[in-house]
Image (cartoon, rainbow, N blue to C red; front, side, top):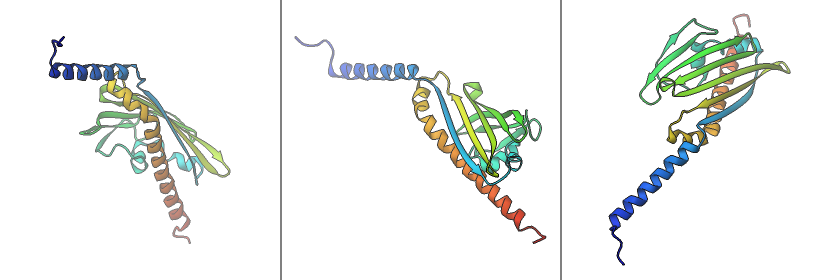
Length: 186
């Protein structure tokens, strides 16, 4: 007995089943992720903090965003931040939401009109004359079924990005310490 469906219908039907299955699995995957990195910085918590509570200073040591930003709010502390509109990243806003002097900086990032949300915290503590910085981020990529697949790798990828930024902060603090040590009185 011959099938009423030709090979083209069978191939297209199989492709549709695979696509629908892929999207259905994507809907079931969580769109959330958590990233973490830490470093020991050769500075006091007060000196390290000077680079953390100002969005202008963030551009010196963080790896994002690469595009032009427009500063918003006060120059530092809670309410300060920046917005961007980048062809690759889309639109977004970074805002510092809480500052506890030389201890904690909390921030949030809204992207794509609020469909993607990130909350982050930088915690500083004194460790044998240096500063231990712990950086944690949690994110929600929204309900897009394709983002569920992206969220699977975000823990690892974003942790690596946080580590890169902390390495840049370490270099910035070392340059600051070197220029202070070789000041005009020496």
